[in-house]
Length: 256
Figure: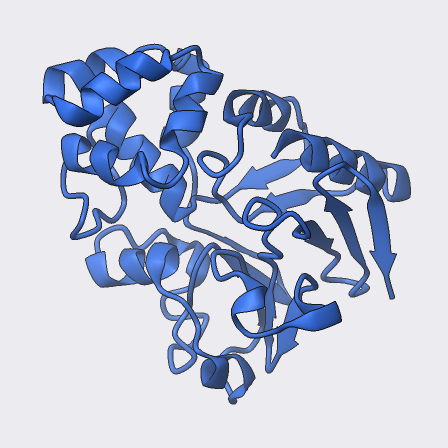
């Protein structure tokens, strides 16, 4: 979703020229401009990029590797077939793929054809996807794409420890979602956790359907900019709590 991303990054930069950005993942699929989104991200000098489940699937397609292979996508061919239903076609078309070729591959997939198709993604973008981290930590907060168990302390292991040797931890960080009860219950974390992945409209409706959710030591940031015409792309400042949002047209709103 390039237009709201450009608008939001620009608004944050004007508010704080020294801002450090921490992105919660999912740079591909859903929206039509994945290639230009990654180009924009690569132009930022003060930024940390975390891995989302969509990025992990894209990595599997590109390199044959991922942090946590989902049971529905244990290999590139099955991942291709699954995510063609979730925005992969738009992503690949942003890199120059032809729709007829994609449709043909859906009906007659093979490892070799998928590999040939993914070769159109520039090497710089492939390296970007392969190098995405699972977590980010600061003194007062941590950031993960999907989930951190409320009963799991945030320091042993910590979210930034890259627990790739623990398949269950990787899966939770990329794929699990919080329940309504988990959002609001007491947690064993010392710091506040910030997460994407779970659209906040799963728990809200009306005027609050597209604003971040704040619970007990938790902030949910996925305000559904690619899932709804009314969705927003949100940025939250951990130090001040200030929220900036951009809609699909790039119009900025600031929340107190």
